[in-house]
Figure (tube, rainbow, N blue to C red):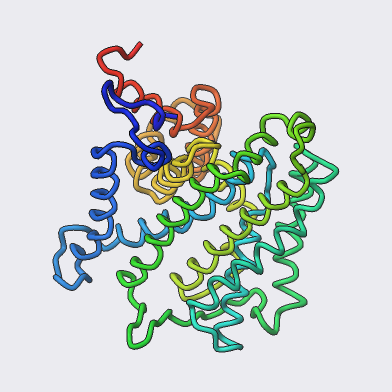
Length: 371
C-alpha cells in the first residue's frame, strides 16, 4: 500500500526498481539497519561472547518466541488474510511439524537441517487433507471442519502414536548441530530462529506478488468472480492450506528444538485462538500484520504490560464490584484485560495495527500534504 507511494521526484527508471520491495535508498538503509541491529542483540547479553549485560537475557528468549509465532501466524495470514479461508486448527499443524521432526531426529538419526524441511513438507500434506472440505463449504462451516484437526491430531499423537510421541509425557528433543558447531545455547539458537523468521516473512510477501498470490486475493475478494475468470478456485484453496500448514510446521520444529522438549499441552485450542487474535490485532492481509499482532499479544501475555496494569485494576475493581469476591476478580484480570483489548481492536481498529502503520507511512511520505 505505502510502497506504491513515494516522495515527489522519486521515480522508477527500470523494471527492477519498480518491483523492488524497498524502492528508495532510505528504505533499504532502514530495513538493512534494523536487521543488523536485531542480529547484534545477543552479543550484548550476559551470555554473549562479549559478556556484556546491556540487554537482559530474558529479551533473547522473548524475541525468539515472537519470531517463532510470527512464522506460524504468517502461515495463518496466507490462509485467512490473503485467501479468505478460516482455520481453527493451526496449533495442531504446529504439533505435526514438531513431533515429526522429533521422531526423525530421535528414531531415524536425521539432523536438524534435514528434519526441518521434511517435517515442514509433511505438515503441508496434512494441511491438504484438512483443506479438502473447502471444496464444498466456506465461512463458519469451514471453521468447524478445520476445528476437527485441533481434536483429531492431538488425539492421534496422544494415543495411537504414543510409542513414538511419548503420549502425554514430555518428549526430549536433541540440540541442533552443524558440523563442530552446537546450537545448545539460547543465543546460538537465536541465529537460526530469527533469520528463518525474516526469510519466511519475505517469502510470504513475495508469494503474494506472484500469479498464485494474485489468485489467492481474487478468491478472497470474490470466489465466484475468480472462477468465472478462469481461476481454479479449489486448487488455489488447497495451495493456501498447504502453505499455511507448511509455515505452521516450520514454527513447530523451531519451537521443539528451541525448548528441547515437547508436550501436547503446548498445542491446545487456546493457542489456535490466540493465533487468530494475533492476526486480527496485527492486521489480516498485511505483510507486517503477523509481526505487529504477535509482538503485541506476547508482550501483553508475558506479564510485561499486565505487571503494570493488573495491580491498578486489582485495587480499583473490588470497590466498583463489591458483590464479587476479590479473589475471583484477581484471578480473572489477565484474561479480562486480553479480551477487552481484543474487543476494542475489533470495534475501533478492525483492520489492525499494520493498517495504521501503512496510513502513517503514507502521511509521512506526502507531508506536508497529509490530507
